[in-house]
Length: 57
Image 1: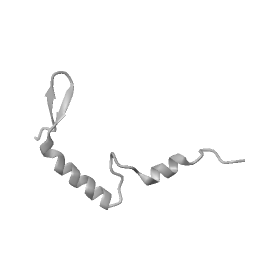
Image 2 (image 1 turned 90 degrees about the vertical axis):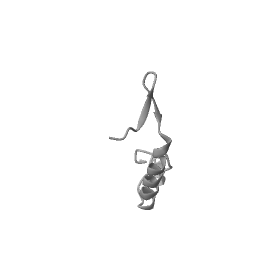
Image 3 (image 1 turned 45 degrees about the horizontal axis):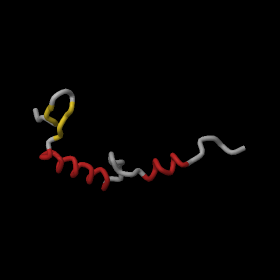
């Protein structure tokens, strides 16, 4: 079973740089499929968050 991070004194995890291309490829695939990618701006969420939550009377 692969190890995602190595432990360094306490609970601080250190990511392994060798795994980054896998995640970069996954993020590129999600983005090309039109899915939200963690760490990148989500235009739909931005529009929804700017709306006033209650109808104007």
